[in-house]
Length: 546
Image 1: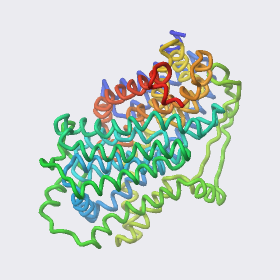
Image 2 (image 1 turned 45 degrees about the horizontal axis):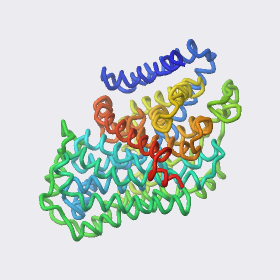
Image 3 (image 1 turned 90 degrees about the vertical axis):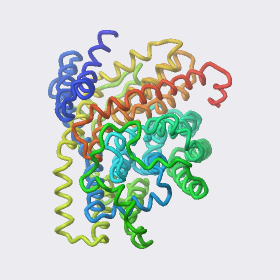
Image 4 (image 1 turned 120 degrees about the vertical axis):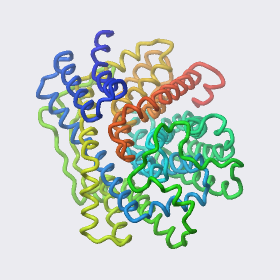
C-alpha cells in the first residue's frame, strides 16, 4: 500500500512541484504532469498504453468543454465591457455601496461569487469575480487568490446541488439526509470564510475594523444555507443564500460605513499592482469622474445582469433538458468505456466505469455566457465585425490557458481510470480511529486532483461509505465530509488556479497564486476535519449529526 501510494503521488508531485517550486509555465507543467501520470499508469499500474491515451484524450476534451468554454466566454464578456469604459462606471456604482476595498471584496468575491457558484459552478465564479476585481484595481495576486479563497463554502451546493446529487447517486444514501448533513457542517465555515477572506487581504487589525458587515454577510448566507439544505434540498441552497447575503450586506452598508475606509486595493496580499490593460488608473479615474447618471449605471451593469440571467437559465434542469432535447451528442470512448472495473473497497459493489463524452454544445454553461456576451455587445453599440474581432482577440489571449486546462483534466482522467487516485484515497482510509479527520482530507485531495467537488464525490463517495461502515461510523456523516472537506481543495486545484490567472491576465504566475492559497486551503480543510471528528465522537458536536 505504501509503495503504491508513493507511485500514485508522483504525477501530483510533478505537477504541483513544477508550478509552485520551479515556477514552470502552467501549460508546460501540465504536460510534464501528464507524462508522469501516463508513465505511472502504464508502467506502475499496468494500464494498457492505448487505454491510457484514450483516457487522456477524454479528459482533455472535457477540459475544453465545459470548463475552457466557460473561461473563454467570460473573458470575451469582460473585454466587451472594458473596451468602452463600462467597467469604470461599474466600479463607480460599486463605490456607491462602499468605497472601502474590503467591503467591495466581500460583496463581489463572497456574496456575488456564491450566486455564480450556485447557478453554474465549474470555474464560473472565480472567472467572473476575479475579472471584476482586477477591473476595480485590485492587484492580480489579490484578485486571483482571494477569489479562490472566497469560492469555498458554497462549492458543495454548486451548480444547483450537483455535487450532492452525484454523491447520493454513487453511495445510495438518501439525498435529503446528505443535503442536511452537509448543511450542518458548512454554515460554520460560511461564517468563518468571510472573516478569513478579509484577514488574508488586509490583515487582522483591518479585518476587525469591518467586523459588523463581515458578520452580516456571513450570517445572512449561513442561516439560509442551513435552512434550505435541511428543509428543502440541495438544489437552490447557494442561489437563495447568496441573494440573501447580497441584499442584507447592501442594506446594512446604507446605515454603516467604517470609520477608516480602506481605499487602496493594495492589501496585505499585494506584491505587484499591474492590472488589466486599460484598468491601470481605474481607481483614480473613478474618484475624479463626475457622478454617472442612473441610465449609465444600468448600462454598465447590464452585461453582468444578463450574464446572471443566462447562467441561471442554463443551470436549471428544465433549461438543460430542453436544450439537450434540441441537440446533444454522446460519444462512448472506444477502448475505454466500461473496460475499467471498480471493485470494493473503493465502491460497495463491482461495476464497470463508464466513459461517455457528452458534447452538449447547446446546454453548456459557456454557451449561455457567450449568448449573454453577444447580446450585451449589440446593446452596448458594437457591430458584428467588432464583436467577432474582440472574440478572436479573447481566444488568442486564453490560448495557453485552454491548453493548460486540457492538460490538467487529462491528468485527472488518467489517474481516475488507472486507479491511482483511488490508491491515494485507500491509503488515507487505513487510519483507524482518526479516519473522520483523514476521510475529510480524502475529499480535499479528490477536489485538488480532479478540480471538482462533484468528481471527487463520484470518485471517493463509495469508499467513504464502505470505510465508515467497517469502522462503525455514520456513513452519511463521512459521505458528507467528503463533499465538505472537498470544498477547501477547490482553491488549490490546478484548473481553478489557471482560471484565476487567465481572468486576471496574469498567466505564467500560477506558482505565486498556488503558494499564496496553499496554507489557507490546508488550514481550512483541517478545521473541517476536526469538526467531523467532533461530530463522530464528541458531544455536543455529534448533535450536528442528527
